[in-house]
Length: 112
Image (cartoon, rainbow, N blue to C red; front, side):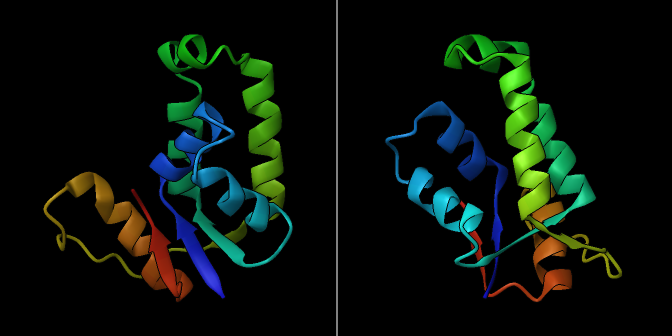
């Protein structure tokens, strides 16, 4: 089953290993489902996780985030975007998530 994880889910996992996002990411890393990700979505993961205020809040080093993102890159199933579906949503920032899910044929989008 293909699943797309919204950036907020990934951020929540890094922010708190005891939160509800953690078992989901652990399942993804263990291959219990296919984690779909496009290049633009991965760049969003990278951007948000690498922000200085986020690093300070989570007491995480840039190096730790880079290692985490390397693990993510090894785990995700890359999705090429052949069809753009804009505008469809009220929040234009979520269009990329929808496009990735549609192009991946994802069974679900996990978002807060």
